[in-house]
Length: 109
Image (cartoon, rainbow, N blue to C red; front, side):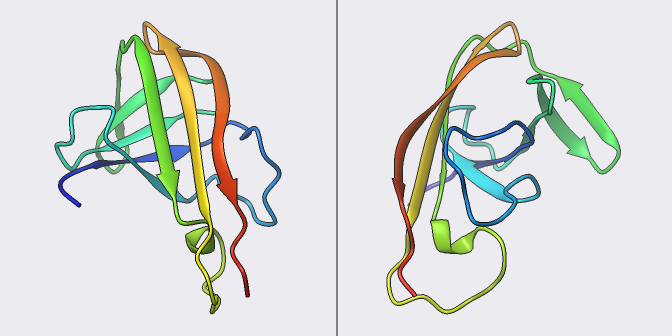
């Protein structure tokens, strides 16, 4: 699987989920894969979380793909088959310009 970063996404996603995603950590390999934590704020700004309570703005330009097993979002429940959620956000100088759905497959209970 390799190394990756984690990203919390506070903006609305382009798909309606049965649970709130804003506190969920998604995986990404778009930002360097240094086991770091990032956040897209509700205003669409990209930050590096260096330690609790301290965020550093990231002036990134390009695509950030993030993904998670859909069964991992929200409550811990038992699923027969894992779902999948993958989205792509495009940034210019650290400000999100757009967000798109790549794939969503609902988990099967």
